[in-house]
Amino acid sequence: TNIPAADSGISLVDQQARPPPPDLVVPSEKPDQLPPSARQQWDNPVEFLLSCISMSVGLGNVWRFPFTAYENGGGAFLIPYFLVLMLVGRPLYLLELSLGQFSSGGCVKIWDLCPPFRGIGYGQSFGTFVVTSYYCVLIAISFYYLFASFQSVLPWTVCHATLQENSTVCLPSNHSVSMLNLTDSSSNLTVISSTEQYFRRGVLKEKLDISDGIGLPDPALLGCLVLCWILLYFSLRKGVSSSGKVAYFTSIFPYTVMIALMIRGLTLPGSLQGVVFLIKPQWHKLYDVKVWYAAVTQAFFSLGIGFGCLATFGSFNKFSHNIYRDATIISVADTFTS
Image 1 (tube, rainbow, N blue to C red):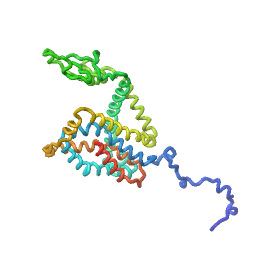
Image 2 (tube, helix red, strand yellow):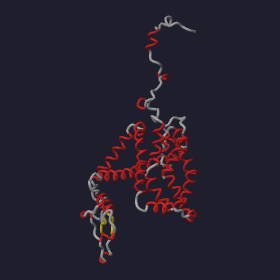
Image 3 (cartoon, rainbow, N blue to C red):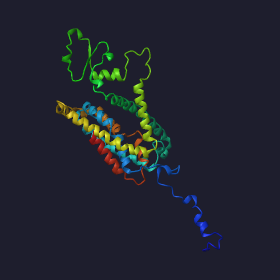
Image 4 (tube, rainbow, N blue to C red):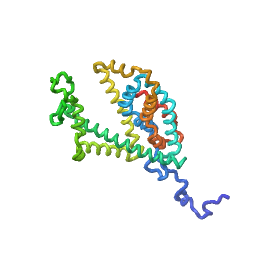
């Protein structure tokens, strides 16, 4: 029965001024205005794609893949590597992203589907913390070299008398051993490059004897490490809203560095011979199980499978996001980058 507003004792003004019931309130789509139970989402699907690329493309492509390929058959290593990527790496990559997107939870909450295995999520979290810690150490050393490079003469290109060790002879950059004029009495001396001397003695402050203790942290290295953790904090302080913006830099900058290193490497004398030596296939190594094991290890390390990060990234997607397309793009980009 329709009751007029005047007969019900409630005026039209009161009906318009009265707020809607709590269950009819539509939450705002802005991340900072979501209710506590809602999960934050990526501001742009491109940020999710770039975040996954920045996690997959990195040191594993720059220094680990060339060494692993050379050690395990050169060009022949590409056969087990591509097979592992297509049959194991890419399906697991898609599976981890899909589980995170479906459950809208991180690497721990995702195991609500099977609570007895929830310890796997805690193990992944601890493993990610360990990897993050030593990556911050590597970045801190990179910061140290960056600040040290603001000099007219790069300190690692020359020998330093204060860093000289007993029974060693320092070889400056752009010098050969024949220029040291070593005699027969110098046969017991060890020749080290100026870069090695600077890194071991100047940066790391290595000691031959630690019987008196390991000493105090180096102030310069400690400052670089603190700077790294501060940058990490500001990158994550607003969740994916801030880390997604950082991904524009972290996903593009590695390609800039790799292109610069490639151009520099190809312009050096004997570069083509070095490339041929690297990719020359050693077919007999395909019969070695260790080569296939190295292919699996490289695929997992490069794609970042099993750390829980992929499930966490996928959990910030919309439920209907095309995860299959992104998994294909990321896996192909990582493979061809290597």
